[in-house]
Length: 185
Ligand SMILES: [Fe+2]
Image (tube, rainbow, N blue to C red; front, side, top):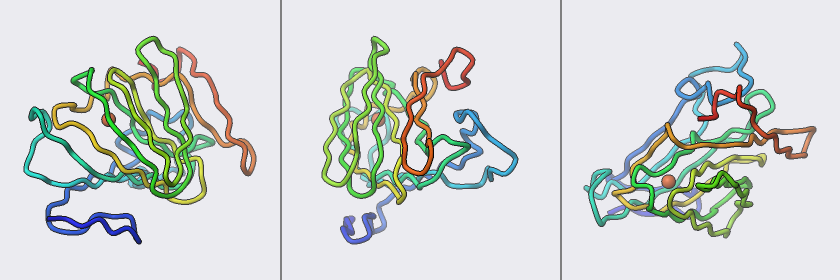
C-alpha cells in the first residue's frame, strides 16, 4: 500500500522505487556542457509504485511521478532523457501536478508538438512517439504518469529535432537541431 501525498506531491510507503538520473549519465544530450557543470547533479527523479510487476510483463500498469528540477545547462532548460517505448505501439498518460514546463512529442513522421504542462494539464502520448519533459519554469516541475508494464524504455532510437533554450529572463526559444547535434539519432 502506498499513499500519494498531495501537499508535497510525492509517494509515501514502502513499495516505492526511485530513479535519480545525474547529469553525468546523459551529459552528452545537452548542447553546451562546461567544466562548471557538476556531473553529480540530479536533474530529475522518478518515483513509482513497486507493485511487484517487472518492465516487460504483459497487461499491467505502472504509476508514478517525475520531478524535473529547475535550471539550465548552458542555455538549455533541464530535461529528461526522453524515450520511445520498446513496445512501440503502447501509449501513456502524463498529467501536470505543479510547476510549468513543456512536453515534447515527436511522432513517427518526425513532426513534433510542444504541449504546455502545468497544474491540471492532461497529456495523452500516443504509441510510437518520442517523449521528453522540459522544465522551462522557475520551480520544480512535477508530472504524474501512468504507463503499461510491457512498454519498456528505448533511449537509443528516440529522436528529438528541437532544443528548448532560455533567451533572457523569461523568453523560451525553440532551436532546430542540426545533424551535428549529439542528441540526434
Ligand atoms: Fe514513456
